[in-house]
Image 1 (tube, one colour):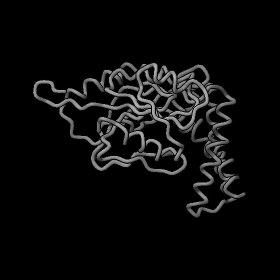
Image 2 (tube, rainbow, N blue to C red):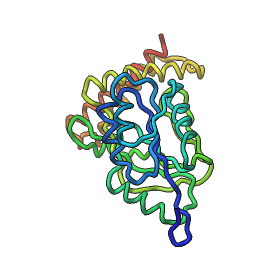
Image 3 (cartoon, helix red, strand yellow):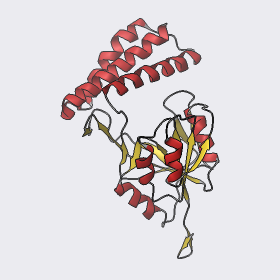
Image 4 (spheres, rainbow, N blue to C red):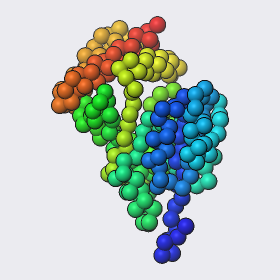
Length: 251
């Protein structure tokens, strides 16, 4: 596509899924600025695939290989070199979608773009607690970028410069308090496994000291108190995460 002789880059949105029937439709509905949507599913047993296909996604079933490999696989199936990587619990805000539309009309010199991510937690948008602006690199040229990280906290490695978008990526990370607890259990197990494989040994001292440090960092240093009781809950969960991770490394 061209505008006044300037080639406009096509964008493929990629979403990796597993049992996301309650969230996939809203995620896809926010992606009107993209030229293609690919959903790579790792074996959902609910209506995720049916809903995604009905909304126009190209649906591919691919056995789970870890977060980074799954996202790299999805990018490799794209018809376009520019990828917008979205999780099923995320949405583009109208401001961010409009910004991406405008970017497509302009000359680009960047290899990737980051954007602020704003989380909705237990009924309210979180503005502090270390959760905002929480910039994430999600729009990138697959020819110059690659996802890295085997277990958790995957990241995009970029060969080139990174631009900054101002519109919010909206995040709905937890369905409930119990869901948050379950995620802490899952991700601390993965983080501990990654640490052990990298040769890191557990420390009783770190297990005892790091949790209160994490709590103070979230609630005081990052002004979580401005988020009220939700800020308190976030700080508690941060401390719990650190404790459980170190405890599991020691096992």
